Length: 341
Ligand code: SF4
Image (tube, rainbow, N blue to C red; front, side, top):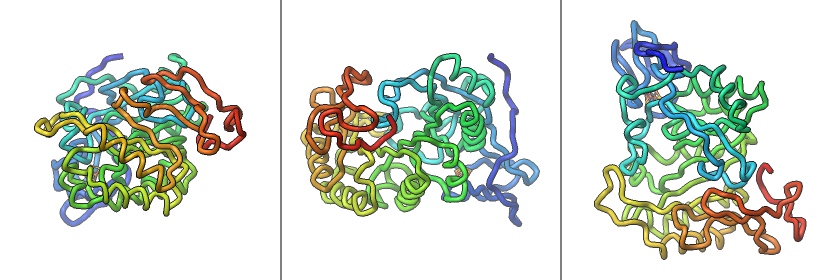
């Protein structure tokens, strides 16, 4: 159903009144907003000293995707999810591939009104077993994500967030009660680079990883390697060591190849040699499942058993060709494969 939604508002969660106006508490930016001002994410506005989201149910993208596209490789491999997004992001990454919706104003992008009831119905009708809140930043359309996820959980539909992980702890913990799987983008292991690439900071994202894991949500991590920005080998080593030291060795790590985009058109694609080196570093550090994205010319998408080393999920692009995981174990040696199968 396509309807006019200009002016569609819902009072936001997680904000407080201040002597200047209101302060949004969703993410570490903690935007202080005077009357009429919008947050950095463009989607939250102070009206008469109440904070409103302008994107509740305002779906600007809706697609059926293979779960591998998120990427999630250890969460019901071969299944499909209904992907949804609204306008808005609290970061402004120079390499953003969805800048036309992530950096836009709500009223400037065509959208359909798709409240949680209709979103979950669309998921069931299209025989998807998950809803993925993705493409832009699900934590900036927090109220829509939370209420949809709450309803989806009641209907036994899985909820997936694909996010940059830039959120405060309290709203994250509430949301985690309804989330089944997440892919979090860890952009760099260097705070200055984090600021330069995305205008965010590293520590809140690390906190997000820890909280999601502690909440028992299935977690996979993506690291896009951008030449000259975050491809420093020592930093990749530091990142892998932190992940292993903090209990993430069973959580798949997806290194992704950069291609020139948005504000980084002057940089070359990531050399294949760099991405292969990153995989070796991660495997040597003790991360058991390491994947390479956007590199079809090398074997980077398949799953190998960490114990017997046999191929247990054969993938071509986003398609699963064959699997050898039975009841969550390697068919050949019985090793328990981390994930939800
Ligand atoms: S969610 Fe948006 S308005 Fe709220 S603190 Fe973050 S950037 Fe600011």
